[in-house]
Image 1 (cartoon, helix red, strand yellow):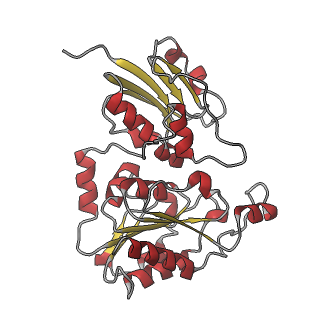
Image 2 (image 1 turned 90 degrees about the vertical axis):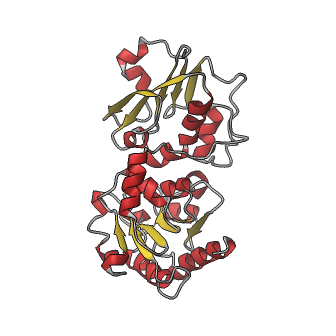
Length: 321
């Protein structure tokens, strides 16, 4: 006979990349909490990440974007319920019977803290932080397998960027793919493209890099969980500081992440098989030019194709591939 349920309210981060990085905490609670029953509150972009997680009684989707105000205080009906554990990720607040004892230790102010460590710290797990993990149904895995079916290794690219300042020139993505899939270590392999509907036009340049039978085009065709499952079949991933880089690393794909006007100490994809490549300027030097990181300036142009290809080939060599 099943015991009494342990109701957990999880208010998810508002950013997809942060939600992926903090997903290991949910996995640990799923596995170790006594008979957990989750209610997850997330915005419409983040919610699909949890759509197939077991033991979720309610997945509440909100359009509210204000990350500085506690959603728990704004969602009246939830306040009346007695929760065994409440994790308000945007506010960095935890309460309930599983709340770890002792004062919360903060990171040193002189060193930015990685988002995964920040999430793990809420449960005092920072010394052994749980890696990102997303639950995926067999149906989704089967769909991803169908989309990625074919022969030959897969190089996955996600060139999308929400802001021009973080966009690496699409022509350089194309040249990188030609070199790695031509005479490079993935010679004769296939090209997987990832992105949402906003990236469909941008990906046109990449679709001509390989023949149609060697192209796995998921741009605008695969949701986040399907993309995650498909990336588990990729032999290598290259992309900017975007959610697909986090999904790729979480799925176990060797990953080269391209950074410029963002802090890789905070947002670096998690895992041993991850390499970060930056251009000639540090983040501090970029901030001198664009202090608010909002100017319509291509901050990634000083990152060369040679640097990215070299990083990819170096990681493949380390892996023995």
